Image (cartoon, rainbow, N blue to C red; front, side, top):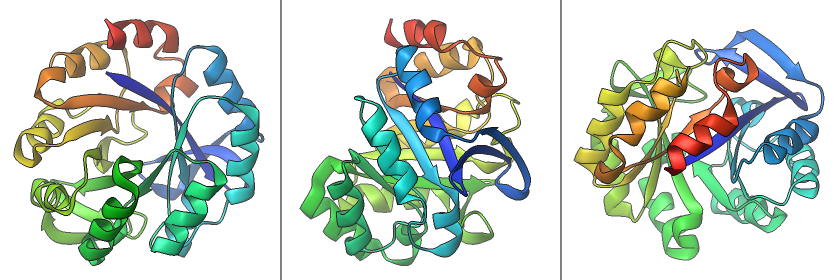
Length: 241
């Protein structure tokens, strides 16, 4: 099971939001690249980057910061936030990003996801963010009438191999990961699922690890690392056991 330390970028800084609310922001570092190096030094094998400004604007906004991170670390990174066209995907991958995460476009334009998967294969990942089990879009500002596992199955049909599933109600809350909904996503979609939102402690990692054979492929670690409720080295040992 892979673990992905998260670096959320807004205005060139490393921040965390509470439940995706831009008005509830905490700045953890003025240098996302230094933060990336810190996680790499602690054993991280993959980083999860989010361009929060991009998610709002509908196109990437912090690529200079992403480039600085890529120049600082040797481990692969994935990037989401405002990547909504084939041109955006190409630009981000050409920069050196290993995987792109498509979000809102998966709801609005499944054909684009299919085309991207045909061209770039498993370098395309889809982020499915849910409020009460329903898909949220546009930087979580809107909730659709589409059930999250239904979108998961649609993405499987489009050629997607991996989904990042976020329970928005838990994101940034340190209230524990929604194991049940994450496992349901894996079972109903048949895809590898990376859990996101609410991870607090080593117990969350153990709970997810128990379902690895059912498709739980990893977890995004955000506030738990920044608030020191979870030790990365310990978490990596449990995930890799």
